[in-house]
Length: 485
View 1 (spheres, rainbow, N blue to C red):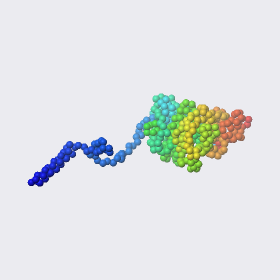
View 2 (view 1 turned 180 degrees about the vertical axis):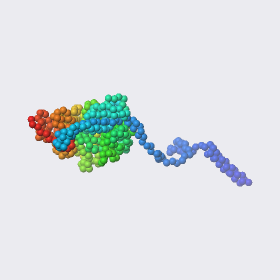
View 3 (view 1 turned 90 degrees about the horizontal axis):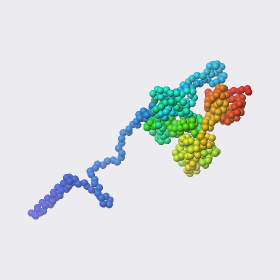
View 4 (view 1 turned 45 degrees about the vertical axis):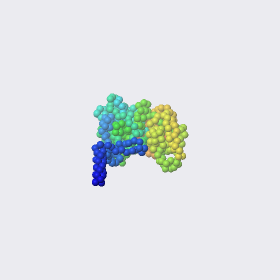
């Protein structure tokens, strides 16, 4: 009997313990605890399910370009130009067949785009849109038409600045082209094929492109490449980012057919705003140079300098007495940074220098014999001083009523000559009286070959002694005049 009572007590104890445990865990629901490593504190935990710690995939949101389009379309204008042309003066072959009709002038028209950059009517366009214009008109997006004044132009960057008498105009604010990233969305706004207010979209495909289309001794080419569609008439239009800020001026395409073929090019706005600022303030671009010739880095150049990359710009020649010479730079040095900004190619170095003025101080980082060095440099103008650039420095002096400049290496190759000067501006004077026009190449005067404006001045003996002149007309044919004194 005692065994039965004992067994019954045990079973009752077990049952009571089970009931107590059930009440403890199910009814009271006291949370479990775990001890930390030093057993000095407790952390509460609750029931949880295991989850993966990667960020969940989300559907990509499409880029919204409507804001940028609406913000900019009314600030891009249609630029209409008119100019007077005629057959080459005194061309004996044309006169033989057509008589005097061959030299009768006729008016031709052209068009392009422009970007309003201030509410009082300053407008940026391309130099190649207006360089030959006798008359310029601007048509706004609301169809109002204004005569435009040419404030200034810069063939070296293909930028021109116009002004119309208007107020409270919608305009586009400057962005920062240095901050553009490959793959970033951009809009091109312009007037292709005379179709006003056309917007196309694309991405930034490349930066720092040099196309070799600006034929000048001091040209700056560092184009932004995009796949936004451009066609004839887009020149001078706006390239904007998704915030509607101006990041470039659309200028060119590369195409086997002359129509859009998948790539287009714009001038970076950081170059544009510097040129525009100079034209507004001085009427002349204040161009800074460092006094070097540069080229792309080759494997041989990198090996010579114990350099592991093919980035930068190799100094191929130093101008004696120039900024680079004074700073201690040498031929074969590889420039990798300018004023702290990385330089990956010669065009990028040109772009960074082009954002400065004579007299500015900067730093140049370069590689020499495997060692990186940084030096300070004071930029100069084309005359080798730090003073402001004058039209005579930039464009050359007037001789016989014309402004002339030396031929660039590519122009000498094009015409297969080893000397010559190009007429860049023609005013009243002896050359205009002879029928010589802008774009003509003068090879010799009074039997002497000429390579510069000073050569021309020396050859004519103070502009009083003109016996003969020979050269090349705009159509590539030769001209020759001789006179009796």
